[in-house]
Image (cartoon, rainbow, N blue to C red):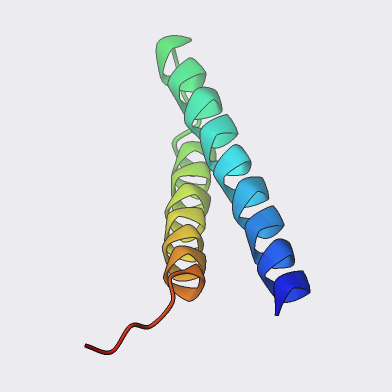
Length: 67
């Protein structure tokens, strides 16, 4: 279980990092003037998918406590 948890934490860190990087890229694209709307939309879609995967991984890492 520890090894599985470590791999989930590692993957979570990678996804958060990629999400932050995409946020930076998107902000720079918007600030830089004319924007390729299709490329921007694809980056935003990827960012949303990352957010969903981060949320899923976080929920997997929280233990189920039945009261």
